[in-house]
Length: 293
Ligand SMILES: Nc1ncnc2c1ncn2[C@@H]1O[C@H](COP(=O)(O)OP(=O)(O)OP(=O)(O)O)[C@@H](O)[C@H]1O
Image 1 (cartoon, rainbow, N blue to C red):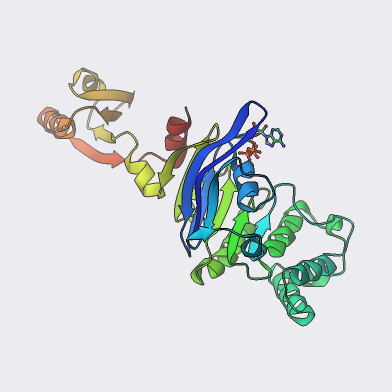
Image 2: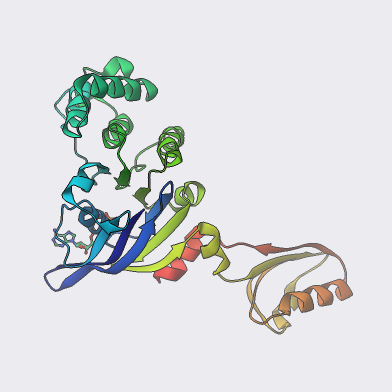
């Protein structure tokens, strides 16, 4: 498990990361979510030892992480690490060697990854000759090639089409199945919701929410949708509710008091037909807006 505890980093007077704590258990894919400037990249750089930590610490399997530990971590930096003007395979093999792989192993892993991403025939091409999405695939290959013990990926899915996202997720899942903890940052909430085992939401350098997507959703407003046989306008006068929207026969309400849902349903049935009455779970974007407001 990789843990950050009270991690803090200042730039001048500005505290970019402010006592941030969370853990990525073995085998979990954890989404790191937050708006521009929230502090995600700064946190990841501190985990990787690329930026000095001002307070707090990073722990790996119960001890403070060492430089030797970090050499076994795979990192995909925001600014991307590969050279546009160099051959793709050469760079991947070189990176594999830097991570301690033998040349034949690094070559084999490079061939496998390029083949898998449909880039087997581009091995000798320069990185810059690939489309942006394909360059992104090669960058991900660079981070996972040496089978790292931990993966820290800064916006790995940005610029990928949905099919490529699925390929990459399959690849990451192969690693989490062997126990590797994976932390990835993303602005794509729907994606985070679909893929990750847990998420940490950062706002202005602080953790404002963390847990599974379901846990976060259950903390959101309790909303119900009711659809009647006729106009739903009368719902506005019912106690214990906040009416979010009324549209003809349908209304979306937020429950402000326990039992308000039962009261609403009883009243609706007394007045006529009820064709739908269901709890509406907030989506992650709504939760996100709420916790970062
Ligand atoms: N080297 C630096 N010098 C000064 N300020 C910095 C430096 N690096 C980051 N910051 C500031 O720290 C804050 C957090 O930036 P960071 O890049 O970590 O955010 P982020 O969540 O990764 O944002 P984005 O989603 O836009 O990449 C920002 O206010 C940023 O301007």
